[in-house]
Amino acid sequence: MNGRIYDRLPQLWPDSSWLRELAQRGEEQLQNHPHGDLPRWRRALEQLPACEPTAEPARSAPRLGGAVADPQRLKALLMELHPWRKGPLEVGGLYIDSEWRSDWKWDRVAPHVNLSGSRVLDIGSGNGYYGLRMLGAGADLVIGIDPTVLFVMQWLAWRHFAGDLPCYVLPLGVEDLPAAAAGLDAVFSMGVLYHRRDPAHHLERIRGLLRPGGTLVLETLVLPKGKSLDLLVPEERYARMRNVWAVPGIDRLREWVKGARFKKIEVVDVSATTTSEQRSTEWMRFESLEQALEAGEQNHTVEGYPAPVRATLVAVS
Image (cartoon, rainbow, N blue to C red; front, top):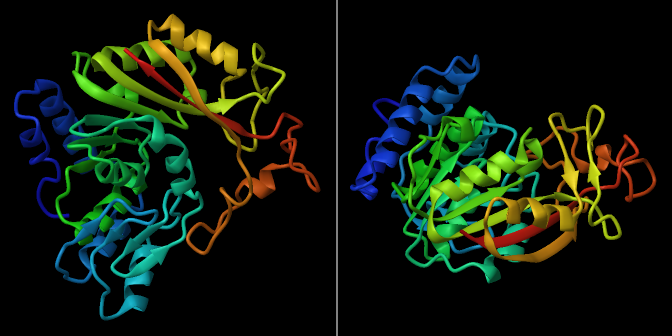
């Protein structure tokens, strides 16, 4: 991790002052981040084996780099970056079986968006898995933001094997985005809205980042069928998650998006999250969805709320 990480990013969109400011903020945050595990993570990155970078992003498990000579050593180094939440990924010939089968979510989203030639912002990007899939779907540039610096380290790990793809992850949150209009072709907000105290402001902020006619892809928790106008405000936690401020019914979610002046609003998928899609694995050894559901049944969380259902909505600015 010697040198600056994001210097090339503004070159991929030379006339965007917004992106120059974003890259500078990301650089400063990464260089000055106080997380106590950063030295250990950086040492792991520095020890990754040399390779000829290659990338096949249009795969369920994007293939990044060829097989290394010592896969056990590589596994030990990548395990230093545990837990791996989003994936699967194939890195240096090693299959990373992440907590989420993120490829399942992507398969629900991909048929409903055209990303050919697009500049995309991925809010809450994690380690950049979806960014890879967006590149595989034809995007020209994917800018991911996620305040969890471990996910940036994971991005740097797979980037070592993939080369300098036009897919970046910056250690920033929505509040760190420059205030100026960005002119983006698409903004993805997946698994973020229920963590925002003011969902209306989040949606309005996204609209301000899009060019006219740009695409919003919103994936979020919703209430099950029959509660379309309801709103759940958890008392403390929801499915053992902190900072879940509100879970709307689908019709209430539509109203929020319409209130932010989006058009052509379409709910393209509603799916219950199962313990096959989100689970503990060797690469994510902590408790997962199974431990967040009431024992012996799948319909309620341990707090007694309806079990997680997620909706994907596409709209136009």
